[in-house]
Image (cartoon, rainbow, N blue to C red; front, side, top):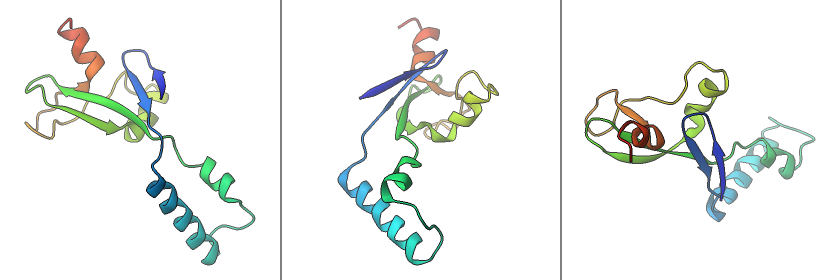
Length: 109
């Protein structure tokens, strides 16, 4: 498992399952048939698929935990628009959902 360290938090990458790879192959075949892409091998197509990068999030209010895809937050982090992700907690619906690393630093765990 690969791990990426950002300034205030870390993420990790999980390998795609066989069924996910099969879905990508089916999508690739469909795009070839529909002439959406041409002169591209599956390996080249597969290399454009973003990593399955995961972030552990936790609510500052209700302490709810969840593992989420980092793909939604990554562009904002890379563009330095935000220092770390913050989102609405799916349980209590408060804008208190932060990376677990940030939660631990705030609560000194």
